[in-house]
Image: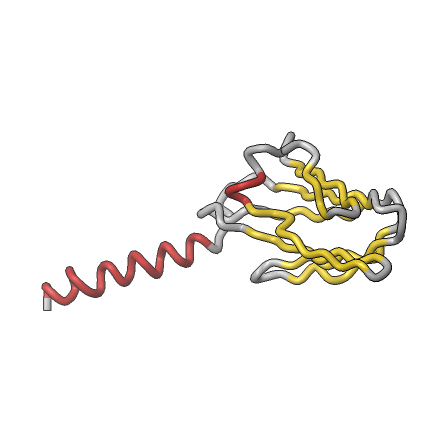
Length: 123
């Protein structure tokens, strides 16, 4: 029985604890993503993650869309957005914690949405 606990149950408990902890945002600073519509036309933006759907928003020319998040403990937070204007449709990962936040100033990631797609200002 002790062998079962040591070799099976204990590693299983550690794995469950690790997976549960990765979903938490233990004292992580809040990050803000700001997307500016630099298209010259109204833009529809729809952002979501695995856990959250932020809905669809119509952004006027030079308007901004922003949302704040608290990255999880494991650094695996990711949000992706679709951008639509006229007959154009683009899709991009707008927030990948391990990629972006080391480049973002004062916990803000600034994006310019241009006809070729999203462009991070301070990357």
